[in-house]
Length: 246
Image (cartoon, rainbow, N blue to C red; front, side, top):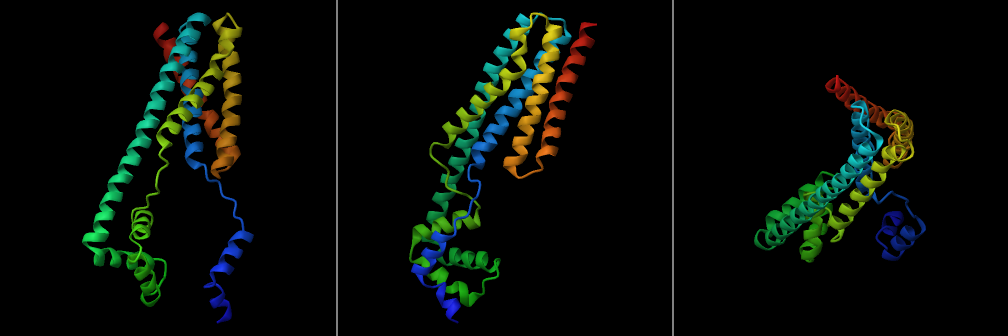
C-alpha cells in the first residue's frame, strides 16, 4: 500500500524522473529526410552517369548532365519534402479543429472514447473514471489526449516543412556529387565510370551501414542492400544505354 501511494506523491515522481534519464533517438524525421536525400542522390546521378558512359559520351558532357540532374533533383526532392510536411501540418490543424469542436458539442461521446482508449491498455472503468473527469476539467489537455491517443497525431514543428525541404535538398546534393566527382578528375569516360563505380559503391556501403545503425536495423545487411540497389540501378542504365547505342 505504501509503495502504491508513493507513486501518487508528485515530489517523488519528479525525483524519480530526474534520476532516471532515458536515452532515445528523437530526430527520426531529420534522419528520414537525410536517408531519402542521400539514397536518391547517390543512386540517380550514379545511374545517369553510368548510362551516359555506356553511350560513349565524353566526361565533360556526363559531368554537365550530372550537375544539371543534381540541381533539378535537389529542387524537386526538396519541394516534395516541403509539400509533404506542409500537408501533414494542414491535416493536423484540420483534425485539431474538429476535436476542439467535439469536446464542446458532444462531450459525453468524447469522454466515452477516452474510456475506450484507456480500457485498451488494461485500465478498468473504476480506474479511468477519475482520469476522464480530470480531462473534462481541462479541455486543452483533453484535446491533446485525443489527438495523440485516438488519432495518433503529434503536433508538428511549425518549421518542419522548411527544415525538411532543406535537409532533403542538401542531402541529395551531397549524395549526387559522389558519383560525379571522378568525372572531374578523369577526362576519359571509361576511366571515370570505373572510378565512379568504386567510389559510389563504397559510399553506398558506408551510408547503408549508417542508415541501419541509426534506424535500429542490422547495419551490415542494410549496407549490402543499399549497395546492391545502387549497383543494379547503374548496371541497368549502363546496359540500356549500350543497347540503344548498338
